[in-house]
Image (cartoon, rainbow, N blue to C red):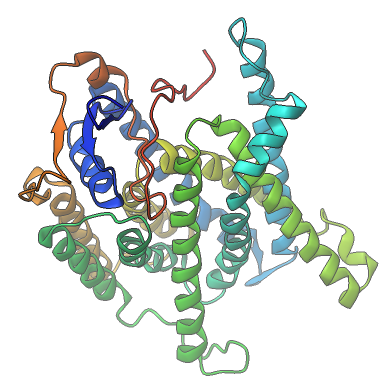
Length: 405
């Protein structure tokens, strides 16, 4: 703190009275001025996410036999979380071997216990993700892969509302209009998409399918926002250590679900490899890679960017499902995708950014325009409104590595 001002170690903005409002404004401004390295990172994240998210519903569809799953979806989720835990441990070991002289080991007992206490909030998104991962399989029973991806795009609007409420993010009118266009695009694609003659939980197909859709949209949206909140509010903690906690909680919740099923269906349910095939093994690897990539989105990029990149995956899913399974690419799908891409361009257009409002002396934000090093090395790591008082962290390492050096 200098002269009553707090300087952000990332964007080098100077804040007077760092409340959630000023932190949010600083985040929005810094996001429009990310460095070229950050842009490259974002592009790589989006491309990887498009491939992995696009393949996920196709692999789920390939895993079905006569329209049913011969394996327990919860076993897939447990094996996925176990694979991610192993990955996090391996990366921590690699990072530990390359630590600088004098640095504490990330796997030392005091460091581990302190980090576990600071990141206990990760248990919340872990539980929500465990529920959502099961819902992904349920949704595949009522919709084709392309339709599932289009439905999941509804999460963008819910996430935007949660970001505004919980993390005090600000969106311009143009961006809200872009989100409205997104909903229109999804609605156009969804016309006459429900399969006929299907029932769910003994309810008419429309009621059951839309009930699953409501849960399918709200649960992962809450998980994404809480995940970004938890990861960025403890930004100084290694992402691999945070992932170890997140995936450890997820594996625990899924294992408890397996035990619960075994109580009702018998010990045979404990065979987590029963009914699996090559397709399910690929599905587990894909889900694990997708979850790992998502953590980098939430900590170093943006939840909205993550969901829009998943939207781009829709076109890949639609074309692939048409080629592999004979699903027709209807005019509704083509028009819907077109509107979605227009929405995406409008949302991220420089013209849609919020213009700075006149600020009084208590909320004035002064940008440091002379620090070129910041532009070349910093990541977008500010959690706008990480809590209501938004204590703006000072002095954390602005070059937190994405991968071990």
